[in-house]
Length: 317
Image (tube, rainbow, N blue to C red; front, side):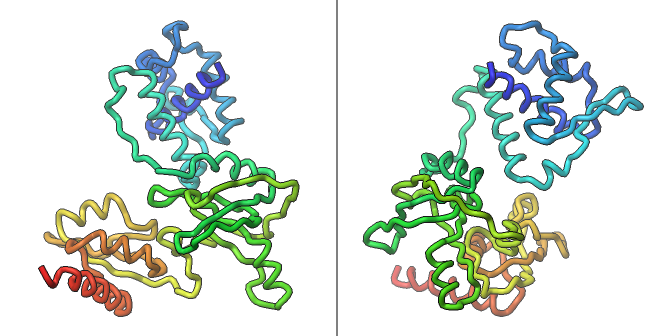
């Protein structure tokens, strides 16, 4: 029953979110009768149950559903910033809403393909619990370049998914203490670990306090993905892409800072502000010959070096 209620809450948030001009209870009830989540109860959604769901959604997700009594008693999300500024909350709601639809409609079974994240799932709950309780974890990790795994403690700060892989950003007690003793700045050392490179994760009885003022968004500011390289400054990158690929880039930006600065019948020119790290260059190379870096010169030269190296691989053919 609890899972059924959760599915209903997600469905209701998703329906109201998709109706940006608001939606009446009558229309919500019509959609309810079509969605397949009544589970054998009455066809209609009782008004009392509807209001109970609204209260539960506020408690569970912090999302306020309000009623505009001046315009046909339309219901709308009163604090849309809760979704606009929280990618995790939005992702969870949209993903579960899709799952709801698949479960409720047998006609869709086998007709929706999800992108799989190959591994690392088994550690997600343990790490999330440790984050919630500020609990130190003992992990056994083996990097690709390491012949043997090593075991050490981490203080988990956040989880991040990028390119079908889960990562945990953690403060390293060992390296942070070493820097403190040697007077090395910065004193606190944060490292990123791919969950699929973890052999084991065990909670400890030790706890930690997150660094006061630490901001996840600030830590990854200007980053394309998971490579931070703080020694690389954030640069203004200007890209030119040709039709039809530029339309794809416009609809699916490479980075949140991307915006259009010029367009004509053949191309669109974009600017974005990022640190030109290795994973960013990989994203640019994925655009193949449908995009060109115009500025700055150092990024343009690096792209030229990459493409010349690629060409050398095929010279003998």
